[in-house]
Structure formats: C-alpha cells, structure tokens
Length: 202
Image (cartoon, rainbow, N blue to C red; front, side, top):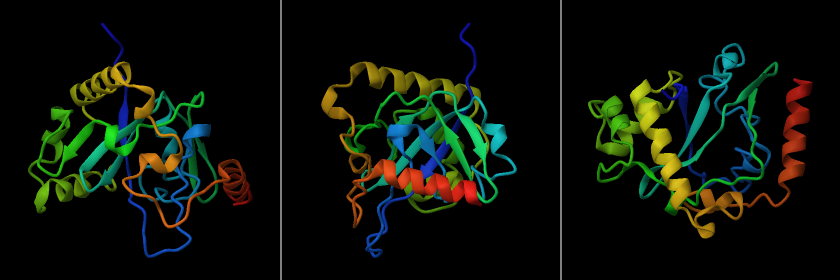
C-alpha cells in the first residue's frame, strides 16, 4: 500500500491592481521557497507552528476569473522559522508551476472540480457562490486535507503532470497568475536574497 502523504492548501491571493509596486513575487518557484513576504504568518506559516509542516506537501491554489486552480504541488517541505515570519523550502530543481489557464480545477465558478473529494469540505459553507465558499474555508485553514482527499489530489496532480506539454508550464512566475500584476519582478534572485536577509535580521 502506498504511504499516506500529508497535504495542506496554501491559498494564493490575486494581484492588487491598485498598488503600482505590486509584484506578487512569492512563492519563489525557481528556488523552492515560500513565505518570506510574511503574508501567511498568522495562519499556515505561523512561526510557532510552522514546524508542524515538516514533511508535508503544499498544494498551491490560485484564484482567478475561472475559479480556483491547483498550480503547484510541492514535494515534502522543510520549514524554517524566523523571528517574525517563516519560510518553507522544497527541492524545486527549477520546476515551475502550471500556467493558470492550464492548471487543474480545484473549483470552477460553475462548481466543477477535478478533485471532487475536496468539494465536500466546503460545499455547505454559508457563503454565496463556489468561490466564496472555498475562500471562506481555506483562507486561514491550517488543517491537512483528509487522507482520501489528499490521495485524490495527488493522483490528479500526477496525471496532469504526465499529460502536460512544455507550453503548459509557466515560463516566468507571472504565468501562474490569473493576470499580470502592476509590476513584474525581473530580478527574482535579488528579491529573494533581500527578503531572506530581512527575515534573518528579524
């Protein structure tokens, strides 16, 4: 029997178009890193609880006009707590996420999902529309997905990877977003190094 794998969802926000400096740099897919901006430090990436993520896989879900999509599923991660934020790292090997439009559906605006097991978690949430229900349930959630749901998500991800063509993957990080942010980060290494230095300084 295959070993059970722990999977948690990281809900990625959409770019804020009213902020001219918005780049949406994190996650740093190329380097296998997430969390240095501190956006999830009060829930999934809480410095005092992040060690609970050790060995888990993180399902990065990106929202957009079409719905919420699974753009990336990490290998097992290693958590790194800092004084005011946390980072998780994984063996990226240069692998990029799916382009938003090519990624499998977690939930579409019409209620269609490539991972039906996950719908059971939020289908009865008292919010209008499928997008609202999913966001309400997973915006601050720290609990792993139920085993059956995690297994189905991994199966769907692996099948999508096997069927993928080169053009299905993001060429640059903005391809994994539903639309381009006001500003594009063309110095990913420099941005990562600055954020890491700030985290180390506390």
